[in-house]
Length: 161
Image (cartoon, rainbow, N blue to C red; front, side, top):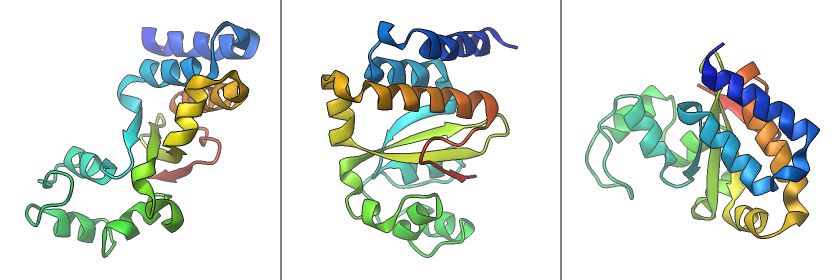
C-alpha cells in the first residue's frame, strides 16, 4: 500500500468516526485532492476536450473550433456528436442541455474505469456556504475514496472507460 493510499484510507475512516471535525465541502475537496490524478471536479462543458486530449487526440480549444481531430475522436468513441458522447459517459440529455451549469466529478478506480457524476454548480456553492448539506458532502467524499480505493460506484454515478 502506498503512502498516499494509506492516507486516503485513514481519511475515509475519519469521515466515519468524526465527520463533525470537517465540513461536507471541505471533506469532498480533501478527498478529491488526496486522490490526485485519479479524481477531479471538472468544468462540464469542456470535459470532452480534456478527456480527448488525455487520450492523445489533437482537439481544438474549447469552445469547439472547426479544426483538429474531433470528428475522428467522436467516431472512435462510437458516437455521432458531442451530446451523444456525454450521454455515453452517463450525462443525461437534460443535464447536457444545461452543462454550463454543471461540474463533472470524475473518479478512476483501481482498474482505471472512470465513474462520472454531474454536480450542479449551485449545489456546490450551497455545499460550501451552509452546513445543511454536510451529510451529502460527506457521502460524496466517502464515495470518491471508495471509488478510487475499492472500485465502488459513486453514489448516483455512471461508469465509462
